[in-house]
Image (cartoon, rainbow, N blue to C red; front, side, top):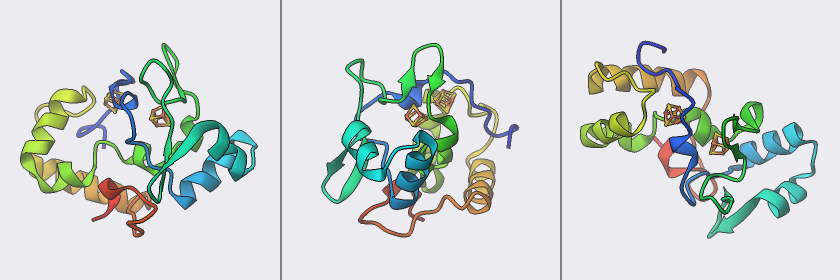
Length: 144
Ligand code: SF4
Ligand code: SF4
């Protein structure tokens, strides 16, 4: 994996609103990690957007769990979508999206082809059980 992707902890992907979907499995994991009930996790850290639960942002535009200079504060409990980046559906099925992701994320090896990225990504998503199956509650980016 490190020849294809090696996170540089820059935090770019933790900025921006509405992208971090918390599916049922994610909510259970986060609640366990934070030693809180699922209801309290929702109340304190998330909000519904239609049928999907998403992490809130802090006032600085970053995810509510992102701390400057320290990164993700819930690393071991973070949602699947955070575990899956940069292997999102769009980047796997569309070479132009992949090219943009490669510019955006310094962790993606600049030398690899889209095909190499796709092969490594699909293997990773399957091995880590990150593919989604529920379009109403899980992230579209993980539906393949
Ligand atoms: S943008 Fe890429 S390198 Fe930066 S924190 Fe996110 S995954 Fe890591
Ligand atoms: S949960 Fe962690 S990895 Fe995911 S967006 Fe928030 S700070 Fe980043």
